[in-house]
Image (tube, rainbow, N blue to C red; front, side):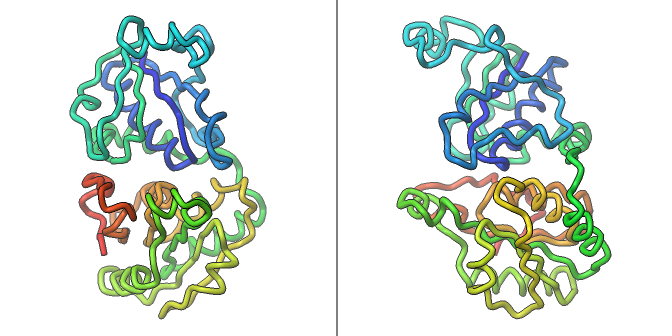
Length: 287
């Protein structure tokens, strides 16, 4: 049995699921999800994997290590005196210890790299299909985007990246120069005049402030609680311009087309001390 601690928003949860599921597949065992930390997180940190065809079960009390409220038992477990074996991600790049994790491991981290599950992508990709039926509005948008050979998703992440001092210091936002370079890169690499379908947690800001040399369509019909609908529509686009965000990372990754062009920012973190050399697949273009 492999345990995975879930924390953060939908993009983070997908990384954690994919990593945990890969370890479980390597050992022919099941994946158990520990969702207790989600209740302690930010407003957007709600369980979102129920929209996908995942192969895992929610951990019951009997399956999970002691909660924080049981201070002594929790401390003994973290110190390695109780099962399952606690394994924490170290740093931001790929950890060989996680790739080699054995059965009976409890995984704690973000695991933001395809390298953690690249060997089992054929098994995992179908499990990350969205099974929640789309609304009528989203069905119409999906049909329109699917018929558009020039469709490029563009993600503007704001929210907690600008609302808090910590978000600004750690993450920051992608600036206008990045998006201009990304549009030029799509033109050069994909050989199209892109039509940009803009997804954002602040669509009004995007409409008022994005000034790009391409036709732009800002999608603002989905409420904040329907982020999975935006992710589904991103994946219908032919090519992708992502932000420094795990959400749009998955919006692009879920597009199975071998011919897609994905452009990502070179600078993933505003804090110069933070760097994940493995965040993007090698075939994605960094600008």
